[in-house]
Length: 243
Length: 263
Image 1 (tube, one colour):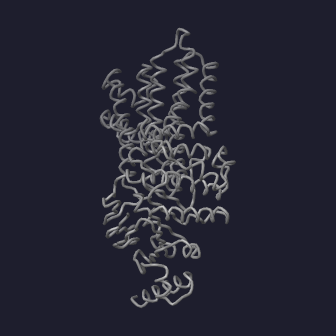
Image 2 (spheres, chains in turn red, orange; image 1 turned 180 degrees about the vertical axis):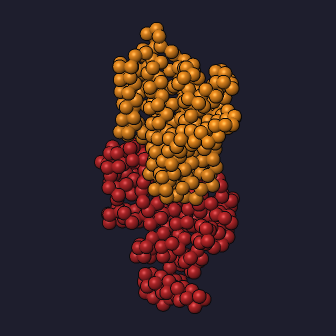
Image 3 (cartoon, chains in turn brown, yellow; image 1 turned 30 degrees about the vertical axis):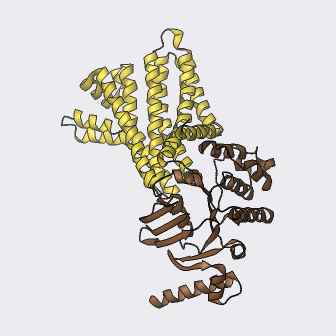
């Protein structure tokens, strides 16, 4: 559904993405992992058009969408920190997003607000809501138009355990419906629970791409946490050797 | 309703709920009412208000504009992840910021002035010129705010650059002008002074009102040169055209930067 071809992005002298080639298929969850500053968020932002790649193509349904905006009708993006127009209420914020998308006939906002226990908070100004509650509003905005592609950037970081569980159930349900899902997370138990495929990024390069079972088998570790730690150590060691 | 109008509308709603916009409106209203009650006719009030307008509007527009863009940066990312073109978002943000400021000024200053316009001695043309100049300054300095906040990533540096621009145009400019006139007093200075006055939107706004007021003694050197060179009608046309240029320059540059920016 989404394909990245030779995506390269530099910020000054720093190469954040170095000729990335990836394909994200429908009905699967891909976790992009890596330490802070490895290029995970930039990769997501390149798909969204928030970051303009220096080179390469982002293909959505076979068409290069770099510099266009219409394809984002099919995208849902949940950033790690939820920041809104603080003088609006949660209800107004939801209505604003619906309005900006041309008031689509299908919208799941009521079901999602109930799912995340938001109904009592809808009339409150967003500035008065806690970080976790704002993140629940963010989740509603991400899923409410049933986008075919979901980009979830450390989305569960601010959610309480009940909301996080509801969120993960929702993600699995979306996968079952054939959605293309891309997520980043530092909570590896969550990745193990959700992801079909893992991409390990370091310094803008892909160091591993494959299924979770394949990663565990290739590293000989029992958990994803240890497998990723081993990958990171190997990558850092080979980097030291080249220096 | 198209996307730009919708974005502007939500910006206006958010601004209308802010305390600062109420304070800004109240300040202008009280200043105008006070000057009208104690200062006498509308002509004198307009000239007194002119100094407040020339200093306060650029300062408030550029500071509020810059801070709002920095504060809304994450929200801008959220909007850009929707099916919205960058150009529509930039124009919508500009209008959502500038229109509440313009409305606050027109209500605070225009309402009390125009309410007494039927008194007989009121100079409607002069009042409208003041309102037009204040509106132009609001739009120009809001456009500069968007340009600065989109070019400068660091909030503290951005706010510093905004304040420096205000200081240059509102205060240091007069000192530089005086220094140039004094240093080159033995040479014909009309053309350089005209060029310098066109280089400052605040001076252009002052000249516009002063040309309409038609009192040479109050025009200052640049205003007097403007009238001497072009006469009142052509002077007003030229100054107004230069103000339009000063709006287009930061607005267009800001839009180009926003179109190419990485978030």
